[in-house]
Amino acid sequence: MQFFKNLNVDFIGKRKLAYLFSATLILLSLVSLILHRGPKYGIDFTGGTSLQVKFEKQINVGDVRNSVSKIGFGNAEIKRIGLAEDNEFIIRVEQMSEGSDAAVMMEDQLTKDFPENPYDIRAVTEIGPTIGSELRRAAIFAVLFSMIGILIYISWRFEFKFAVAAVLALFHDVIITLGFFSVLNYEITLVVIAAFLTIVGYSLNDTIVVFDRIRENMKVLRREPFASMVNISINQTLSRTIITSFTTLIVVIVLLIMGGEVTFSFAFAMFVGIIIGTYSSIYVASPIVIEWHKRAELKKR
Figure 1 (tube, rainbow, N blue to C red):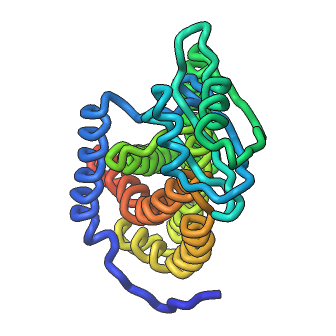
Figure 2 (tube, helix red, strand yellow):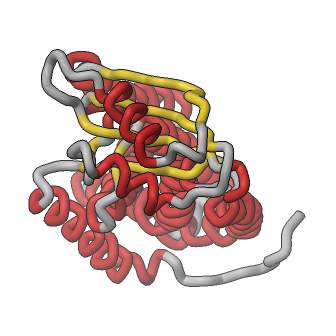
């Protein structure tokens, strides 16, 4: 299905403006990360206790927060699960000193503050600081190893210059998405890492579609200047890119609005990642291939 036929948008001619735009976003992301001394990690990576409770009667987040604040958990992360009438929450607090049981302390305080509103404990999860640091390392290695695997695959499937362009575009997507989380002070959890890896796969798929058309046109449009041929290839795949991105964004927006706080971080990362990933396939990955090709031609001359 092709909604846009015979397009001739000059994407490549605007690549310098795109460089400026991308550089600005990356700079803002790095500045925010430096000012915040790195990403804001959740208890998945720093260690802590997670308590999932379901109350029998109506109660709001503010009442639960006021209760746990009395025992020193004023910075607790409290998320409602499901609909408002479900009265189910996840309460996450940071790691306490040895010998202290955060879950028991929260249960005792909730029982004391809401004697007429009984609750059930659905789940208790405790993550120590050692496990948290190991998970943090594993998450970083997962992203890096995926990039290395992509570099090797695209070098074999296409050419090395295409592989480098794709990996740089993926770094671009991840850094900017991470920057949004840093600027907005959102936590990085295992769910968010899963979203980052999903973004890597989504953006790569979009980039490979463009690269595949470029490779075909390198044979069909041999008399065209290389930059012009790349621009034609982007225009030829634009219909597929817009349809795929738009349909995926619809699902993500619904999840973002109606999914509740539990899935919000995943949906938000996907929302930013899809937009940036679609942009980078056109304005980052393809222009890098052009610049590489120009330098190779200059060396030949």
